[in-house]
Length: 232
Image 1: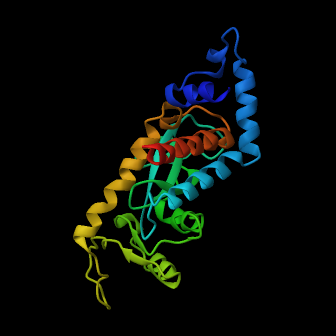
Image 2 (image 1 turned 90 degrees about the horizontal axis):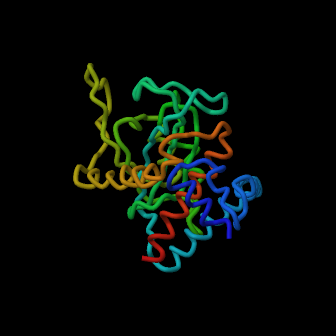
C-alpha cells in the first residue's frame, strides 16, 4: 500500500509531506516504513533476490562486467559528501559494477573527492549474483589503469581490458598491457546504467542529509531497473 507513494518520491523527487493525502497514510508513515526496511537491509535482500531471479531466467550474464563511477550532486552534508574537482561541485560518489547487459550488480558509496580507482576493489568484492561472486573479464576506462589494481584482479582470476594512460615519458621497462579496442566499446553499458539510475530525481540530486536515506533510494532504483528487465 505504501509502495506507490515511495516510488512517487523516488521518481519525482517530491517531499514526503507531499504524500499527505486524505485516505492514505501520511508522508511521515511512508518515511518511517522506508527507513525501517533500509535499516533491516530489506532493500539489499530484495535486490539480490531480483538478481537471482534474473539468473534463473537467463536474463543476466556476469562473464563480462563493466565498472565506472558517477557523482550525485548534493548540498554540503556532513555525512559522506565531498568536493569533486572534476565536476566542480559537492556530491556523493557512486561506484557501479554492471553485467554485460547493463544491469547493476554492485554499488559503493563514498564522498565526492574519492577517486574511482580507490573504490574499485571494495566494489568488486560486493559482486554477488546467484552463485557467482566475480566476473571473468572486467572492462574499465583509463582511470582504472594501475599495476596494483591489475595485479589484484589477476590474482582473483579476472582478466582486465583497460586502456593504458597517456604518459609523458615512455615506459621504462615491460610491455604495454593488452587492450581490445572493439571490446572496450562495450563500456557504454555502465554509462547507460548510471543514466538510468540518475533518471530518478531523488538519485540525480541528493536531498537527504543522511547517507542511509540516500542509499535506500539508490538501492530502490537498482531494484526498479532490474525488475524492468525481468518483466519486459
